[in-house]
Image (cartoon, rainbow, N blue to C red; front, side, top):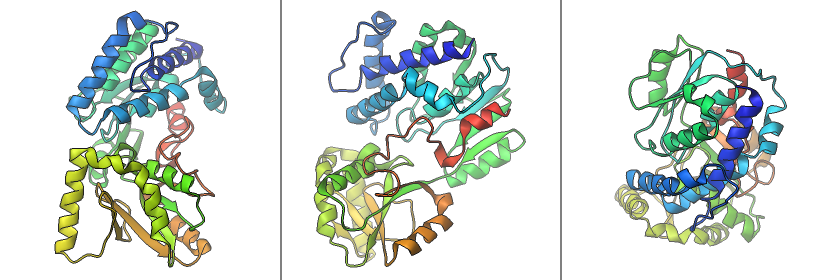
Length: 349
């Protein structure tokens, strides 16, 4: 299969996914195989929602929108232009151990493996085992040559040549032990942070709320901690967060809020609270659902140096000088998890 065939297939997949980016799916008659898969995709989205209730309609639509907009032929070609990718298929089988914290979270690895000409053996998470098999089914319908390039399973991985594994710090130790003898990328737990100066606009603060609350804060690109100057005006922050007040209507989220609030209050821990988000002063990065960490700083220069020493814990930084507010969950195709160039790794196998 030639590279252009792979690109064409994923571009068609992007058009297909974009139909499901809103409350009411918009059928595009120019999309290939819609007569077979449009209704089935609607069913798959509902099954995914039933199987993992963190996968709300809103979050599933956002996922479809992001990937639909990313997977255009222009975007893919621009991304791949910096690499030398052969038209020849490669015999390597790359195992991908996928997380299940947000919908299709392992899709970028899946995309990289197939575009580079390798074959995928995907270990599905029990929390996200509906969408990728369906997406693969559609992809194979568009380009049948992918049929011998994709294998998805919930069982133990076998007969692979390289590994990409994503998990927590604890599972990473297991991955290192089990997969260490193979060429590998092993990702640990990371979180994202934001730097505020107090001069942000109301629009920027509402955009920051998207970075915090999207996917209920479960993604590694979700902002779980902010750095604010001494004597920061918290009203400015909470006014922006109000854009996401509807999160209280999710019973799983609000149960986490009630539980964490009770635990902290019984421990006499000081909190800032807006009735749907708890702010706790903490040096850590990985905050519980409904809880947000913060620290104060006296100098942006000193803070910059501090964050450099913490780079292994940080996925991305949101600020006026880094990733723009509101764009944490809209990575480009060239934005690699943990800063490790997945495509370069695959092309070097």
